[in-house]
Picture 1 (cartoon, rainbow, N blue to C red):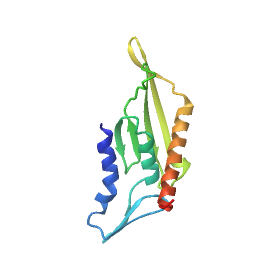
Picture 2 (cartoon, one colour):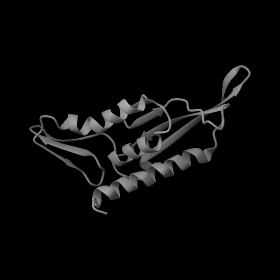
Picture 3 (tube, rainbow, N blue to C red):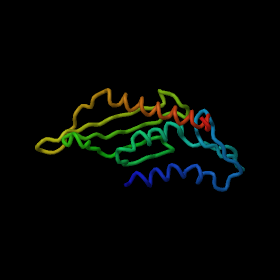
Picture 4 (tube, helix red, strand yellow):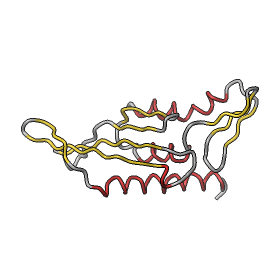
Length: 151
């Protein structure tokens, strides 16, 4: 379970950044944590809603790395139980502080198993688009939940 420590770090990040600051708030447009202290305001690097939505959406795959400041999530190879001779790896780039469809890019890598081992194969182009749609839908849900906490 390598994903749990990464998720805990991502969840604790706003608290750690806020240590020693005078005031902490959230920018409702970007979801970024804003820390106001003696040196002015500081915000985290990427859209928080997209970041958390990407982690939620990809939680079924093992994570290789996750950088909340650079906005890059890289999964490890994943073999679906129903397709043991195929594996996928996903890289997600969050490129904007705003919750925008063009602020997200998903790249899917696919390999198939042959007698000599794993070899690169072309992924279905719809896979990346479906993952992007899922992440964007989840990000919108998270934003709405923040704006309407009682709903």
